[in-house]
Length: 415
Image 1 (tube, rainbow, N blue to C red):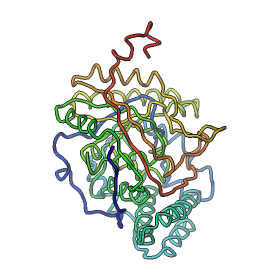
Image 2 (cartoon, helix red, strand yellow):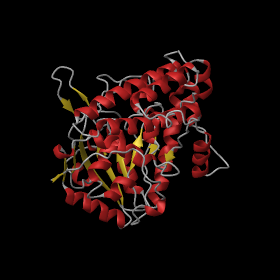
Image 3 (cartoon, one colour):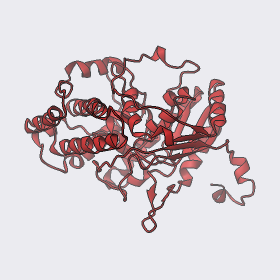
Image 4 (cartoon, helix red, strand yellow):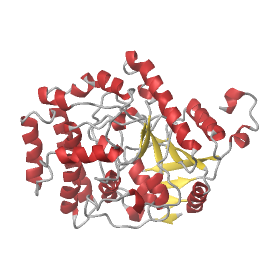
């Protein structure tokens, strides 16, 4: 076990990081599948509608059908990803970046709402997030709490507003955006002060080192994990950044439709390597879109297979298809049940890729930092409770299908 200690960063913005400055053992913007998912995906194109309707609380749901349909289209552009990102930055308003106090920041939200440039439900979510984040950082006892809150929340509100002005479209395989704005460090710096490092731990460091060695040999790694919060990728990366920074920056996450749909979530998702899929839990939310979602998942699975052919990929997947939730009677937290078909798809990918594949179970504990709603919700825009808390992460030795299924009598029992 590795006991962590660390002090929260006091700033959200970091110098731009170019790809050449990252760890260079193997180039691994990872991959993933059409398996069930961590919990979310889709585009909400809100710019034009937001200007016309800033008061309707169902704005994002009303746009959901057209937004989801947009996801299955191949988005072709004459601009490279970096050129497109630079275009967005150049045209972006500095409304939030020009603020220097809490009063100015909150006033900017109201100003943009009144001007019709910010939907009222998004504005409400921004203010709620600000207050909840502030309370959590003050709870940590950090002497620079006020400075951290203002710096980090200014960056968050600025990134959310940029996406309202110019919605970002996720492709089936999304590579973490590191320039001209470093979305990876943006996410790390936001979650860092919420983690009580003195009461956090990482178990089985030797297994994580074994995983790194296999990646350097060109092998593929699959981490089958429970899923606790929207902050899981940042928590995993923070807990590994001291001992296994290569894993932190190069992991690919299977991401469900909601993390690339929710306006307050999208900027954080842009800083991660993602394979975007539709979660089984939300597959039939809009019946007329079910077939389209299945086709989109098939495309994502093909993208993942292509990535795995090159080897040196590390992929995180939550086979439950959603976040863990407490028992409604006892209030105790427990891992959500894994979906057998998702694990079977994963096994096939591991076995049929050109590079050797290895499956490791991963256990994550961080629900106190940002617990999900008690019930699975169909609508986008959940209430976000936040707190300062310790976290935990551990990996078990590799598991193999042949060892597990040796005593099974039939294929269904094997699954």
